[in-house]
Length: 327
Image 1 (cartoon, rainbow, N blue to C red):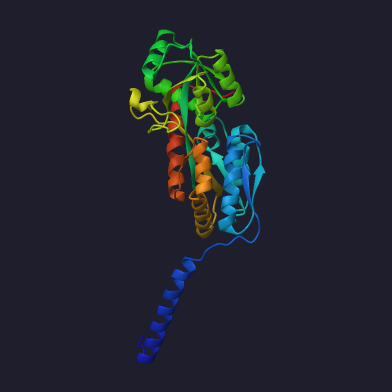
Image 2: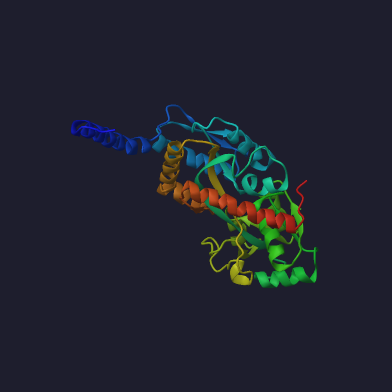
């Protein structure tokens, strides 16, 4: 087949024109035209609700539409994730989910969603280390001294957490698996009763999030002996990490991630990620999260997915090795 020069020129013009259109189409942005629902798998008033209530209005400013928190509590946050996973993948239903329903609970029992293949990840919102507390009567001022007491009385030293299948429990179980020690777990329905019984001496040790622990440590009603992150926590100056105290590689942190249904279009995910990271870079929101003991972590969707994948494997391994049951 032969083309004349005019036809070749015309064909070339069509190719150039098409090539010019492709990048523009590829970079089209999604703009919501109605309110966005932010599903939360917990009740109002808790730590997760505090994050959601502060995040929603900050994202609204970027999206140009209201972001409305919709509470779907139950099953350790799993009902909230189930709600998101079954919603249309159009960007109008997203969820604020934490480490428990995304990486712990799926390793412990059957859930209706696949945390790796059944969701779209928008980004990491924040990370939250734990602090290991002891009652003042416990003769331990650091982690090695506590572990010495635990080894002398296997299963006899009790520790409290805010519940079963929480990052608080998994932090303790990872410590046990890493050091060959065993403590008696006493789960409570929330942080308040768990810390109340620690202060009363009903339990000797507690694994707590940062914010509720600060005041009781300052008041002398509990002693902080270690933090579970890979770096020290400003709220507890001088308190070393678990890894710094002889357990290399130890890292156990809670976190929140923004998720959506499987199959959300890339431009929708990108727009939501921009709104999320813009919100996290707002001084007011950043300072509020930091004051609650959170480490603010703007990220990509890929980084959020990798975090879930890593913790899904980590906590699955601990659950199997420690033969844990959450019923």
